[in-house]
Image (cartoon, rainbow, N blue to C red; front, side):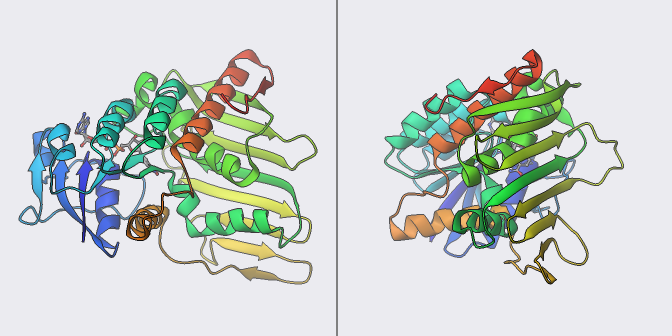
Length: 339
Ligand SMILES: NC(=O)c1ccc[n+]([C@@H]2O[C@H](COP(=O)([O-])OP(=O)(O)OC[C@H]3O[C@@H](n4cnc5c(N)ncnc54)[C@H](O)[C@@H]3O)[C@@H](O)[C@H]2O)c1
């Protein structure tokens, strides 16, 4: 049995806690939170825009601490799962990597590309495995899309557009120095998926709105692939409070069109072919369980994670920084292929 320690038991820590309980071969053995109430297993007052997080924990089955370093160095913990706010990711990830244990770190891997590159260098030389929690790559309908793009089963992609639209989350997220605004906190999911499925673009052209976070809180990017597909993504924290969170994509292949919308009644993923339309049935789990199950599988097989590496995740952050530069300058910004 692989023993897991979760650092940070807020919205995402509770989501990971629920996902770990569904993951065979692993169990949560320890938790750490700087808030003594949370470290004592009181999850009341947590924010959430996603269903599925644990609303309680059996404290008789886990050890708890207020000090993340105690968890990192605890001999009873094999995998360190970092779910604290973004500005604390890099330092905790570096300490966790240095312990020689396996590490999973919530996205964004760090607040800036510079910090993320430092984590990536440490992860490359680490004794344990490191998985950046880019959950979208592990969401079944998105994994289906990445495979459809790579295999060209439906021909080449002519155009792909991605949307991730929501309202401003509460608390520290409104401070862009901490969260990076919707650009880094939300839209990074799509930038990373585009990077994963289509490779690094040669340049980006972004229209953006600086919102209450002081960072881009609404943006629309064209990822430029000369002679390649037309790829765009829109992200926002600027939607009105009653707007239901939207996560969707539409991909026009030469021989079919894929249309995904989270939570759609008739089926989240529809595939429209030349003669008929059908619902694509994918595995039912979410990306959180997907990424944790993948890490456990890698550990059991003694095979380093390759579906997403720290270096790739860091480069996705570099692309969002180019998007920021493009929006603020009104120019197309070239992406350095090896930043
Ligand atoms: N993958 C996704 O879909 C997704 C969704 C939401 C949030 N996130 C990411 O997850 C991370 C956490 O976000 P959240 O919404 O859970 O935040 P949150 O504010 O709900 O919870 C953070 C928790 O960490 C604790 N904490 C803060 N600093 C700490 C420290 N130094 N040591 C130990 N505990 C500490 C807080 O007390 C709190 O319980 C963020 O980086 C966020 O971007 C990812």
